[in-house]
Image (tube, rainbow, N blue to C red; front, side):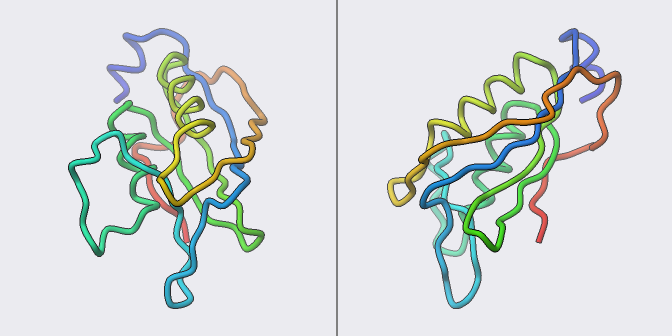
Length: 124
């Protein structure tokens, strides 16, 4: 990732929060509902929040995603500016058939000199 980041120019970091019907309760477990561009992977026990991880890894960005107790999804994305912008678009516009994204807030958007994360993962 660091070689890709260096080759791609400026690094960018942004925090986000997604509002709408973006979580579902499954036996008391709250999971994020977002659709993956790679829709061929449909597993009955594949938690939907892993779609965000999958999209992030496909784009080559790092950071994290977490469901909040308020029913939103929050996180941080870091990587080459162009790839972070692609992930911002995905977070704002793409959702599973069961989700509804009302709005996505982005904050603390800034250029960074190095990545704070080595991968993209889900926080609990």
